[in-house]
Image (cartoon, helix red, strand yellow):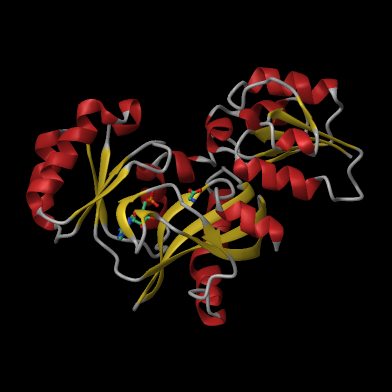
Length: 298
Ligand code: AMP
Ligand code: GLY
């Protein structure tokens, strides 16, 4: 098989390293890749959000499969463009990727289908959002609606800090991604990431991982996109995994198909193990970075 891998991070280096080991692979090309990835395959200078350019490259190298690493490619409609060209793609359409690219979309989806998650509201003005804080207890969880590179979430210890966050987010700190904010109930518990491979109809669990979220030693400092990861993650007991599969992963894949947005690729369920069982913190429409690095090693 000829394979085109899209992306340029540590996650894509791990994917390239693993894909290159498959006896099924005759040619592996990464776009745009990075110098580490170049050690295991060819690179071509097409950007991850250039759907047209990637479809042309896939045709040129006669790709049998395109594997998409980053969410920017999914949001840019790379999977949609490839589907139109008849080229199989590991990664959801832009519509299905909204599970990640719009927190308002994913929260409404979860609510509609009674899939466990924190209670929430969506707000478009500072006034509305500040008033809504009355209905929540501290710590306040405030999220920019759109993609913000893992940095669009604030956990505010008190009301004054929460109000300042609302002002910052709706005031343009994350550009268009902050045009709406989601305010959520705080969930207490240990957090883990569970991965499932999906073909639009079925989901098969692919293991769990945890990343080191806080910037500084001793679990202190601001939240980051992940400072490192490990797998297996002790939080995922057999019981928790079964509950998460039955109550979260399987219904999500079933209902996305029912809603006309069949989900293909990897579903990343960010979960909180609460005393009421696992609840969704967020979905991502791709492998985690750095979680992918440890999963590919395993
Ligand atoms: P997200 O981008 O939605 O995953 O949020 C980033 C991080 O903020 C998560 O990984 C959690 O550590 C934390 N977080 C998000 N939502 C909640 C919540 N409702 N309760 C507690 N912590 C949360
Ligand atoms: N490590 C978290 C993420 O990839 O979203």
